[in-house]
Amino acid sequence: MSPENQPIDTTTAEAYERHMVPGMFAHWTELVIGVVAPQPGDQVLDMACGTGIGARMAARFAGPTGNVIGVDIDPSVIEVARRLTQGTRTPMEWHCADALQVPFKDATFDLCLCLQGLQFFKDRHAGFAEIRRMLKPSGQLAASIWGPLEYNIGHYAVVQALESQGVDASAAKRACSFSNPDDIRDAATRAGFSRIQLRTEDGVSHFTSIQSFIDGMTQGSPSTRYAVALLPESGRDEFLKQVRMMLEPHVASGELRYPMRTHVLVAQP
Image (tube, rainbow, N blue to C red):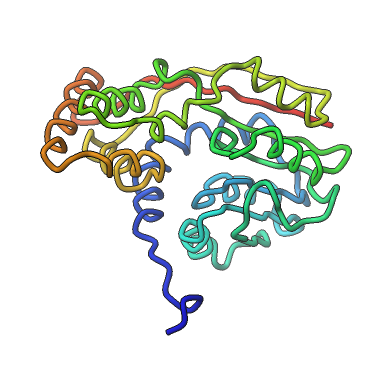
């Protein structure tokens, strides 16, 4: 079998959809979609779409006369997103592409979503510029970006536990690496956005258990999974013990609820 015909391993993407989407992303995605309120017939792009929770929510608003496209650099999440949206009323497409070189014409989209993706771009300024290029003059960007690590208790627990074992946790820190509001405004302004609204929201992530959180972060989160893979075998049990210990105060009736902070950006050309 040639390499291009090899089946795509979707194990990580499935863990992401099973644990991370309901536990960490669905609430915040609904909040952002509610702020921008896509209209029937809208052309919507979901950048760094993951398994497509943003695109799926936007499709409910865009309806059968709209079109929703998801783009991600990871073919495994695109494969899972495609499976999850077969037979939808709203036309939906899924493309594997680098967010800095997206294969769509200028001024194509009414709305571009980028939900917890901008902080992972290799060049954030170029990423903003690429989004700006594809938006119609009346279009808008709606993005969510995690706040500082210390305000996102789950990520903080994982990073602290990794570093206590002498592991380089920089990959796990990337989720909260674009947390300064001034940096976000500056990047949007430099890309040509002139109407910028940025607000900070506090909320709660809700996992069915600490184990679901651990499975999501260590199996379904690519950057954290990479950092956890650096743990020596002798340190894995202690790492898990420390994560559990730090999160235990946030457990009630077996379920994990912990505070998180995110920035919500809405910007127009």
